[in-house]
Image (cartoon, rainbow, N blue to C red; front, side):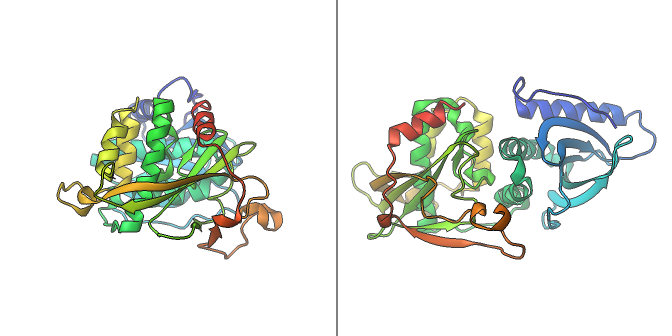
Length: 344
């Protein structure tokens, strides 16, 4: 097995991964034992560095080290990408248990590189959350890689519309902020840089300002950073200024500086491509918008709410609601947008 040091800041991540897998292919041509060969990445977690792998069949793997208490359930539902665990020993070091994300089809090698790049970037930002990020990211890519369907209801479509309005505003601040749009890739928040994050909530309800929170990490701010909550009331409309999701997507695409990042996120969303689909005919207006700072005393549940700052074993699918009418932590929209863009 080989070891290389690479700086993720010096090269485009996707190109870097492709180059490393090409090198593993070259090494495999002279290998005789048929064992998996791997190469290290300069992306550290509390339990070691990420690695890329190439197995005896020439298939690609992303290996994420796990701690003794980390649990990652096998996920073999997709014929394209599978998640299992494996233990590898390198040189004279002790064996390490890895989450093994494996591409099972050669024709999906390029797509898998996009998945691996997205997941690597997320883990580099939040290394302590690696196990949950793996599960979230694979769920987000399930539609693309597994061919399943996911119904776009009116409330869900309105939520995406609200998210895209914030994306459009961020792109006006800096085209590079396309890389902070991590919601489609499984990140707990919709937008996240190293130090700052934005979670967007949209509602079609005519009254009230209640938001539905999914998981204990959705309102957890980046370490030594900030988190803002953007809330938008969205109304279905055919009046002046109303726009469809495809129209907002087209506007955003014209502002981005990285089309690979854009296409990766769009593919992960899994939107229907039929021009006659309801998604293309449904138009919305944002009729109300409020921004909040999720500070220390903001009403929320996070891992720090529990003993040892971790979710108790056996607790799954934590969800709760917050009435924003009881919250006074108002944020300035422009300040939130500018600080995320300045963090690139």
